[in-house]
Length: 86
Image 1 (tube, helix red, strand yellow):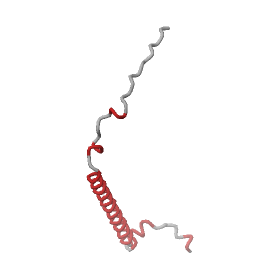
Image 2: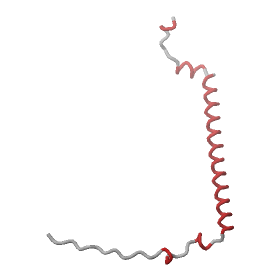
Image 3: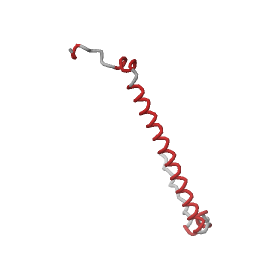
Image 4: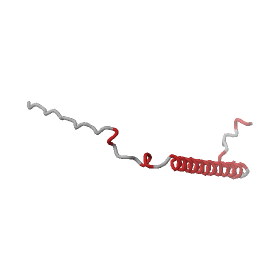
């Protein structure tokens, strides 16, 4: 069998040689404003989701209440074994 060649890894560049990131280039007050805006948007999205969930819950309860007052629905979904109630 042939011998496998060993792979030599190239050395990684030092951390100081890395290119500047956007976070490094922006001032701290701009970063704080962006973080505050991000938090506000997340809170607004959570509020919208909660409102949608609440509306769906209310709609489900209203539909359940309507079906409980509908005699045809109750008759279709009731237990048909009346012998055990005699």
